[in-house]
Length: 239
Image (cartoon, rainbow, N blue to C red):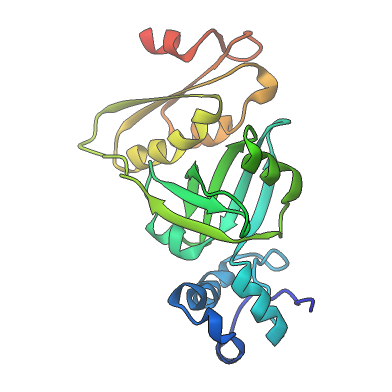
């Protein structure tokens, strides 16, 4: 039942996938799994494809494990990143939106804010803090290459980007991640962007360089003064 990785799906594989698809998984949702893979797989470097395809049994497995974690990164003991291969969600995502995620049939559905999306690669990035039962399970039991059941979205109202001006975006701790796609959208629209990001201490800082790439100014604050400005982000905003 093991499935060999592939970096691209050709027409022959797509036809085999369709023919082998179990009748109970003939919904558009599950068929779009293979269709989405075939569109986005070519954008992954060799050896890093999220595609798992090869045998009829493998196709059946795909139908019950629809979404794959293609990158897992830890920021601290409780904060971590998932990059999820979900081409349809990535294509429709806008800054400020969220997804609903369920790990398995007995899992709970929880909302998670979209921290980034890459339409070319077909991926959506989440930054999560393990606090409740479900997020602790995500941290403890799921790694790069693992599959999970549901990933619904994008949901919610996208951030409004109006005429160019000066925009200040503020985030602290886990709240830093959701403002990243907003900062990028404002910058692409011609705004002057100031990003103020805060953390408890230096060892908890993440994405500082990513913000520098899309911001005219980045102010880093830490509660203990171990990096950047000492104090809260609200103090930096006031100045």
